[in-house]
Image (tube, rainbow, N blue to C red; front, side, top):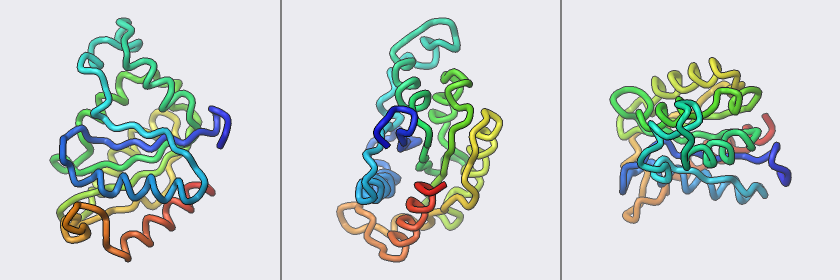
Length: 179
């Protein structure tokens, strides 16, 4: 994955400080690196405060445009880790997608990992994101992974410590790299 067109972006769909989804995100990043992939890493906390109003889509170019180009436009694969917010994906992720030029998404491949403290692992949010991405021309890998009951899968430092979940994520990452 040396050239820009074959780059992979790993995207955390939340900006909340101290969020538990970061534990899964960090583990997935480790899996990618263990497979020899150096992902482009983006969290919603890196977005500029004015990204909703100052962007190419709104005709008011801004700092978010360079992020969009680098993480979406110049990547061929997008791997999302999304926590459940009110039965769906975080609004900030949807807002980010809405300010990215639609052509940046076209013909990409994506995979989605849903995270929740409840029992469904944000499957509904994964479906919502998959629908949005497919509308934009992204091919979404079937079988989004739901990580459920997250608190019980973490150690005292909030690192993902559940071996079964680690194995599922390793297989999913390997499958996505071949997708």
